[in-house]
Image 1 (tube, rainbow, N blue to C red):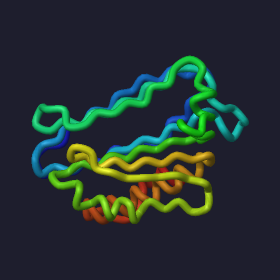
Image 2 (cartoon, helix red, strand yellow):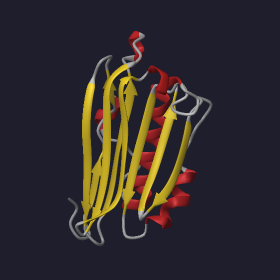
Image 3 (cartoon, rainbow, N blue to C red):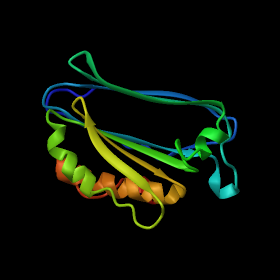
Length: 178
């Protein structure tokens, strides 16, 4: 919950899903007028460095943003049982091993959309990213076949976006650099 004129950042390191993992997570943000929140998550589909790819299990990663007690935006990723086909399918994840989401909420997030889009650095790592505003919630997403590239692009976006929108330093927490 973010009170009037408050600032909230939720920036955990990526969640690495091992083969057969069962993740059910819901992130709920309750935001008051004048408040701002920047929240995000990265999912990595397997212990990639060890050659493991997630192919079965359960992933339910749901988001909700509430304004003054009313639901403003909800979204959920749900993968269950045999996931290899969905993760490989060009119309779905197209072989991606990592997926990132950043959510920004304030009273007028549409003012920040051009900024968000300008910060979506893709480099040459085969990343895909986009940003939009849905019902007063700015959502940015990354999808990539290189988990480190997704982490780096997400982190670069986060540091620059928090500096521009929240007047914070253009850095990530030290924990992100170990």
